[in-house]
Structure formats: structure tokens, C-alpha cells
Length: 619
Image (tube, rainbow, N blue to C red):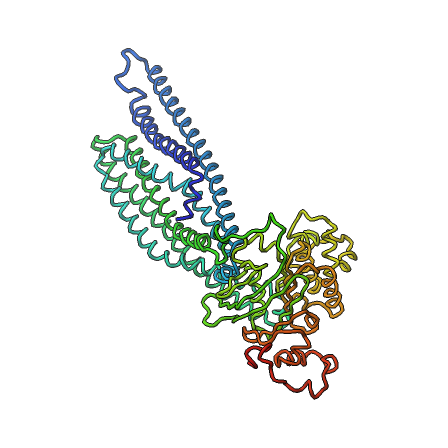
């Protein structure tokens, strides 16, 4: 199990914990023996281990008794203090070790998640990954503390106490056997009842976190549509399911306490009853009986501690399985094999020619392909526009360029090299990708623009902001580039958010620029100015723009039209107006007849699709 690999790094700490707990257990088992000596020898025999000295006066005998009791009492105090010191050191070692293991597991989990493609992220869901990285690892960390502090201690104490019980022949060993059998039956019943609940609890935590996250992030539309009562009821349902499971398991655990107390008290009564008969008959001394009771109680306490841990272990086991599931899930996007690896980091570098060669892509577990037989090439200095109806595969297409997904068949190449053969870090360093979803990170304007390279100089940052048309609103802020940005960019407008994201992509000076519907929140004036600046300042980069607005891509060197995952048109704006009905339909819905350069009658017609550029005809 991979979780245990993290424990191997702390073997010394486990040895230290075991040694300290062995010493502590031995010291605590010594105390009842000292107490027995104080009662049987110090009190009953006046501190004499043999016959009284001849001619000793009453005062001398009293002094002998007092001296023996004080020496044994001092020994008991010293043993107790040493035991407390071992306990404190063991607790410190356990806390330090468990915190280190928790840190390492958390680091490994985040490191693995950062390698995930969108496919793996969809498999687990964000809410579930957050739960695994927080609640589940906390469970592992807590059980590690208990293992180092209690789970190791209880067997040491229990075995030692059993040895002491067996080495003190009283004829009452059967009482201990009966008590242990009752405890074992109670543990078995409890485990059978609680195990299924512990397995479902973590899934309910995931559900609770998911609903809470949706409500918190969607608070504005919830209020706008007056759905507060519905969402409150939805969260209440998830919360009640989780609360009900918690209550059930806690009640089951609470039931164990009274059972253990009944067993302990019944055992004590039985030992006192039968031991009292032995004292009366003179076969057993009072101090020995007291020590025997202590040893039996320590055995039962050890079993009770292990029982409490056994109740918590299933939940920790489920948590470990869930964390392990993330750690063992390999990303579908892997680094190229050594023999196929192509790197140009030490050469003249990459030019930025992007080609799709008969590309077909199907999402994992999907029945039908999302993209089919896509072919195009975009060179440095050229702009490729991608347009089509919602859900036709535009975003999927551009996500294949930086290898967020890998093609199912065909190939995507950069300068003629399959992107699957280029090291991921090197490939993505050549691509400035602006995703459809707006995402800024908490920090400042500067930290967000310099996100791709923290060492870039301010001139490079300002150049990116100028091209992205972001400088106009940055410089009017009192703090300029040091202006704070909230998580997700919630304290800036949609258009400002997009411009900062575009500046972030431009700042690394990539060879390929990919804009996935990244101009949708910009007004037409800013859109036009940004495109003009891109054409002027990014002549060495290949530009791919996904857009919903015809105006954003109508001046592109080439436009491809997607419909249901297939490329049904390819050419310039003017060519597609004449040859592709799908493009004309989109254009007619957004532009006037004058803007289309057609007569009103012509704009209303749907010309036949030229098979050479409008592959597949109307769909």
C-alpha cells in the first residue's frame, strides 16, 4: 500500500516511540507492585521483611516502618515522574511525526493533481479532491498520532499486565478470560454495525462540500432567480444525511463506553469477592489483591483503548483508500518516452507552426467522437479563427494544442513534431493559452501577469498589459500593478478579468497564442483595438482564436467552421460567405446585409456548399 511508503521515511521515529512506550509501560506496571509492598510489608508487617530485630523498642520499630513506607513512596513517585517524562516525549514524537507524514502525503497528492488532465479532474470532481486533500489526510494524520501514542502503548501495557497476572497465582484468572470474551463480542458487534456507515461517511462529506461550494460560488444567480429556499433545502438534505451518519456512529461509539465500564466494574466486584475469600482464608494478602486488581484493570483498559482505535480505524482506512486512489491514478497525459523525446531547447528553438493532421478525438467513456477528421495548419504571423455553434467542439479542439487532452487518432504537430513527443514543460512554454473560463489568482495585478515567469522584468509585463488593452484600467488604479486581485478575480469586471488573462499569456512571449472565446466580455472597440495590437506586436506568433462573434475573427487569415465536431468550412471570411451555409447563417444572425457585403435577398438565401471547402455539406 503506497500510504505506508510515507511511514518508511520515519522509521527512526517509530523505533523511538516503541522504546519510549516500552519504558513507560514497564514503569506503570511497576507501580502496583510497589503499592503492594507498601500495604503488605510497610503496613501489615511494620516494614519488616523478616523477623523483628532482637530487643527493638516500639519507637525503633515505628521508625523502621516509617522509613520503609517513605522509601517505597519515594520510589513510586520517582517511577511515576519518569513515566510522565516518557509519556510527554512519546506524545511530542508522535505529534511531530504525524504532522510530517501529513505534510508529505498532502504534498504528494497536490503534486499528482497538478499533473492531471481535465479527464482526471472530471473523474474525481473538485469537491471530492478538496475533501481528500483536507479531511481525509487529517484522518490519516490523526490515526498516525494514535498509532504512535496509543496503539503501540496498549499492547505493551496489556501484554505486560497479563504476564503480571499470570505470575501472581490467585486462582482468579478465569475472571479475566470471561471479561476479555465479553469485550471481544462487543467489539465484533460494534464493528459489524459501524463499518458500512464509515464507508458512506466520506462520500456524504464529498456531497456536502459539493453542494456548499455550488451555493457559495453561485450566490448571485441564486438570489437573482429567488432560489434561496430551494438551495437551503438542498443543502439541508445533504447536511442531514451527513449529520445522521455522524450521530449513528457516535452513538455506537458512545455505547461502547458503558459496556466497558460494566465489564470493568463487574470484574472488580468479582475479584474483590473471590479475593476477599482468599484474604479471609489467609491464602492471599491484601496488597497482592490490590495489585492484582490493578493489573486486571490495565489489561481491560488496554483492550478498551484498542477497541476505541478499532472503531476509528475503519474511517481512517476509508480515508487512506480515497487518498491512495488519487495517488495511484496515472494521468492520461504522459511525458514522451526517452527514445521518442524531441527537444529544441538548446537549438534555435521552435518556430510555432501548428498543424492538425486528420485529428479525431473522443472523450473517455464517450460513445461518439467529439471531433472528427480535422485538418488545418497555422503558421507564425497568421491568425486562424474557429467558429461554430455551442457544443460543436471548439474548446476541445484548442485544448489539444497544449496537450490538455491527447488525440484519439491523427496527430497535432508543432513544427512538424508530434506534440506527444515534446516534453510537456517545453511544449507549454511555447503556448500562451487563455481558457474560456475566467480565472485569476489571489495576489496582485503584477503577480497574475507574471504568473508564467516570476523573473520577467517590468518592461515585459507592461508590454503585455499594453497589447492586452489592460494598461488603461491598471494605471488609473491608485496602486497600479500592485493592486490586489481577489480569488478568481472577483473584484474586477469580466472584461478586465479577460484582459489580465490575455496579458498573462502574452507576457511569456509564446510562439503560439490560443484564445478560447477570450474576447467575449470585451466591447467591440476594445476587441478591435486588441486584435489590431496583436497583429502588430505578435507577428512571430501563430494565433488561434475561438470566438462566438463573427467580428472577432472575420479578418483572420483563415477561418474554420465546426458543426457537430466536423469541419464543414475552411477559408477566409469572404470565401465562407459564398461557399458555406453554416457560416453564412451565423454571420447573417450577427451582421447586417451591408456589413456582409450582400444584398438583402442574397443574405436570406443559403447557397450551395462548395464540397472543396465545405466538407460534408449541410448538417
